[in-house]
Length: 120
Image 1: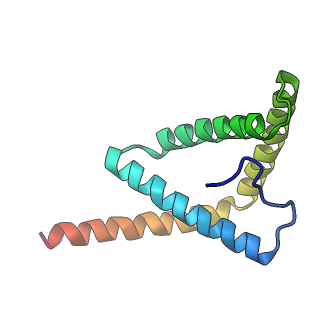
Image 2: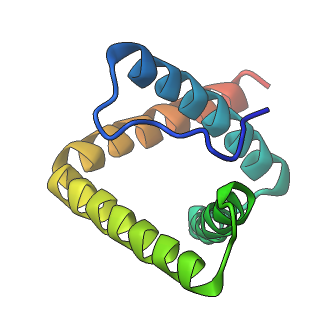
């Protein structure tokens, strides 16, 4: 289990990047299974994930700070807000690539579904 103080450096080395990618893939698989089992929309899942992310970041602060305080938690939330803003900016810059990849993935999934339905 991860310790509350575990994090990735601002400038991660290749091993750290690879570990993050492995963790992300495993987490994505878990979320995909959760979504499929419950037939959730992507919009609902994004809200659930956002709330979970915020709560986990807050808990991380409380668990790792020597003397947690309201002011300290608010500062941590300000830092988190900045990090999320940077992530959104990066996503906006990569929007065209994402749109292309997501459209292809959805088309492939639809084709697979159609093929599975025909084989029944």
